[in-house]
Image (cartoon, rainbow, N blue to C red):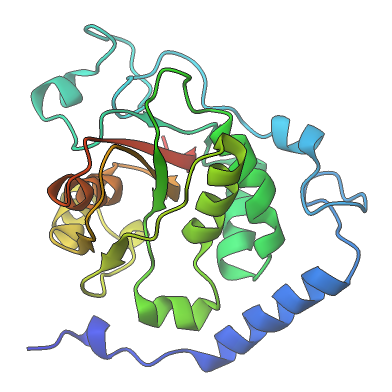
Length: 240
């Protein structure tokens, strides 16, 4: 039986509004989200001033942790995710949260380039990244939004790292928005929600925001099943 999620009708009004905003962003002078000055959607100096994901963190899931064993938190030691490691340059708060929300829901796709560059610079040199993939939106949601924000982030990341961008992942079904769910339901919501084309080597998986890592974990499992030797995860911000 098809779910209500699968039958949801596209919000064409929102899609048209997002398209108008994207066109305006392309034609009008860019104004920085942080400082308000013209010249860019997000100046490099303002990007570096976004709230950093610093402090002691688990190498595997990037969660803040007081106690680590060999760099790993107790949760990852007990039930490690499918991805080998995760990094985010920012925490999902303040101007970083505002930038992601503006990019996702207000059509300000021009923000995604500088955010993607900042994310790429958080990738450790030791990661063996041979290709960049992204966590895709379901086709229906992509049509409603007018673009896939993770795909645009991944394009900027791949360009910054100088590695190929590969669109090998797809959503096999629509899922409820993760932000509305608790940790257990987030995991259940994305189980089996991704499939991947054949891929090899070390793959860097990109998304905009991560909280529990459930979506990245599900997508990484699909990449590993399709032949990836190792999957690393990268997001713009982590909700701690």
